[in-house]
Image 1 (cartoon, rainbow, N blue to C red):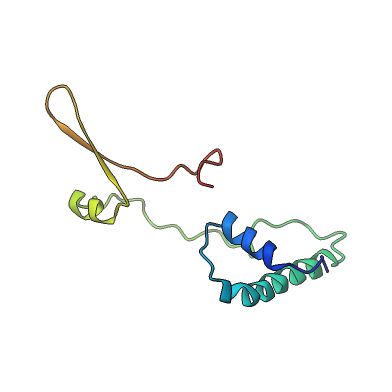
Image 2: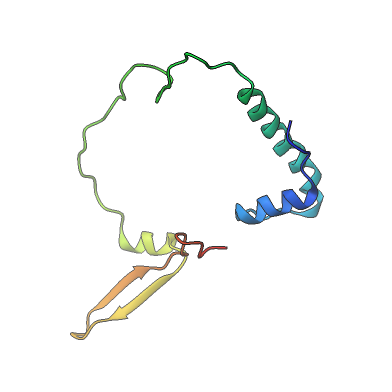
Length: 110
């Protein structure tokens, strides 16, 4: 099994995962993460020589539903759900509304 996780490891994993963790939860989460790593280590020890790789757990195809358009979400409801709305007035006086989201590509969220 890999080296035991330290409380600092747990804090770092929480920070990288953007998960807020209270100091009182550190030990419990350390034990849970260690159990996951132990399970992964057990999987690494399996003899998989000759086992064909799989993309799915079964050979059954996906059950697909018809791709039919539905009613769009009401803009007022969408605005209530959005973390931040930005309004831009274009040259002809119209207002465009955009949902501002945190940057997640290129390490901008850390």
